[in-house]
Image 1 (cartoon, helix red, strand yellow):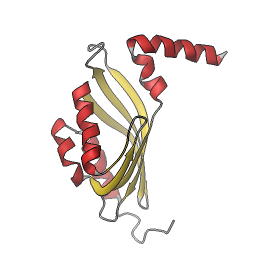
Image 2: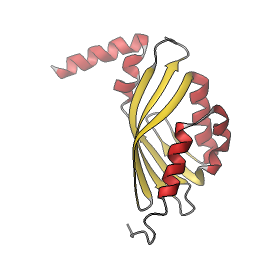
Image 3: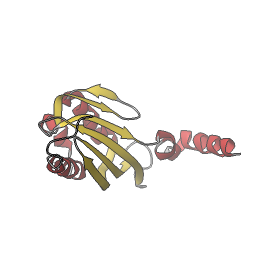
Image 4: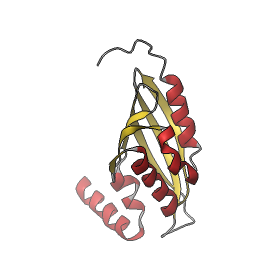
Amino acid sequence: MHPDPDPGRHEASLARVVAFFESIAPDDAARMDALYADDAWFKDPFNEVRGPQAIGRIFAAMFDQLHEPSFSVRDAIVRDDQAFLTWDFRFRFRRFDTKTPQTIRGATHIRFAPDGRIAMHRDYWDAAEELYEKLPAIGALMRWLKRRAAH
């Protein structure tokens, strides 16, 4: 990795990313090209896609499948052209228990393109603990498996 000649230039990019995710709304899914580079790569526990339109479809599906999804960034660090964020994602399931709010805790590694848009976005979170254990039917099985593995 080559040192960035202007190490502070992506601080504004990171602030823009944090502001975007903390205020994301359904209409934003159609405008991902303002945040993501043309060939941006995105990966989370369920998806691996390339390009702002494909990334936008993931966020559109989030709004279709969940009630009141929202991100709260807890920590954000930038160094050269990379950033690391920790966050809480809050939502309610549409299909299951719509009254109980859920929280997923995760982290994101970002690499910025020279123009300040996101070139790489990799989310890290434990799908088994943070999501599957909260589902009505599969959750009981996942919790049982977790108890069995701990002994």
